[in-house]
Image (cartoon, rainbow, N blue to C red; front, top):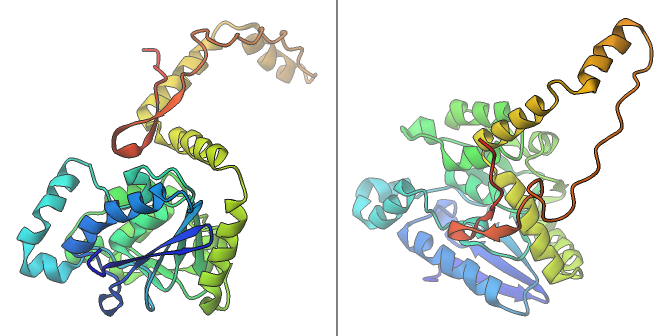
Length: 294
């Protein structure tokens, strides 16, 4: 891992630790290359049931090493190609890790560091943690991190953070209110202890059931907005001409309780109304083979 990443195991808990504290754990080309291998190693370890991701030193992760980018752009050429193909392999989700992943955010999380927040299964943070997205402040666009975050929390919050750039930071308390994370740890120096205990609790559950749960829940998030709208339109049109569409307004106008039509019989398994199984798609991302009517 060229010392850019530390891998540790404490009981059933594997730890992936960003290890460039002198530069805020920013990702240089070596760390970018090491990340998919590190995730895969922890995922393949039969003794590891849960993975915790955190940063060495006072900061969690501050994104791409822009100093290296400015001085040696050729070093990041392959990672630029992956970005162009939307085939990044940085986070556990992008690599297809089947085990539960907890992001334990210590201190500042900036820019590309938000990848690891957006793609974790569970996020906890020290009370002094802060989140910021300085892309636009250094002439870059926010894309993958913001897109993924907007599937987990209010889009306006993500937009504000992206458009305010480096001029604003979101504190842990506000991030908790807005749904970016589920727990604040105070005092901050207890973050790793709390992450270990939480991971050990989760590790007592069925590994197979947890893997299946991850596929199911991430698969639901994977469905695109356009496909979701088309499916919604089908449901909407399915009510056109239904007796309840007439009964509802009539009951409202007559100030009485509606008398709804009996519900249709539930379709049996295997009929066209049933969605297909969830499978792992490109880059290990959970996708559904459900076809949307056109």
